[in-house]
Amino acid sequence: MTEETPGFEEKPDVPSDAASEDAAQAESADKAGSAPAGDVQGVALQAQLDQVRTALNERTTDLQRLQAEYQNYRRRVERDRVTVKEIAVANLLSELLPVLDDIGRARDHGELVGGFKSVGESLETVVAKLGLQQFGKEGEPFDPTIHEALMHSYAPDVTETTCVAILQPGYRIGERTIRPARVAVAEPQPGAQGAKSASDEEAKGAKGGKGAKGAKAADKESGGPDKG
Image (cartoon, rainbow, N blue to C red):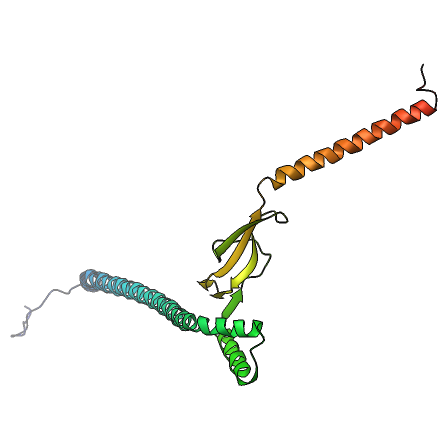
């Protein structure tokens, strides 16, 4: 008979291969449970990154628009500043034109002498520095945009409407005319062109007739034109 030790029960031995399989299954289950959590976190980060990029693009667009508006504002202010300056200078010089006319008349009559001459020349220098330019000369074609005709006549020696006398010179600042030149104009004499054309035709005819008479005289002296 076999004796049994009290308090100990025999347990069946568990194969080691079965334990390894259980551990592998547990590890794969852990990995399978952790994988979806990592994917969700990555998607959330990508969404946040897209939001940040969208906000950055919007702010960049707003900044570019503000910069363009500021540049346009600066150009507009500079243009308005130049325009206001030109208008102010033109208004000032317009008030000085009668004085310049008096200086010009005094010079034409030989009365610009002494201290008055120095003052007049200094004033002309100052207004020239401010951009004032005088225009209007005798013999130039009449231009209604810069000339004002105060006297009118006809002349046989002109071929178009011409300024024959400058009564008051014109003044401009750059391209802005602040006073047109006041002039006396002359137009071609009515019928002068027709008379000139007729005289030219007569001269040509007389020349042609003289040539024909000369040919006849030569033929007569030589006994007539040759025949055959």
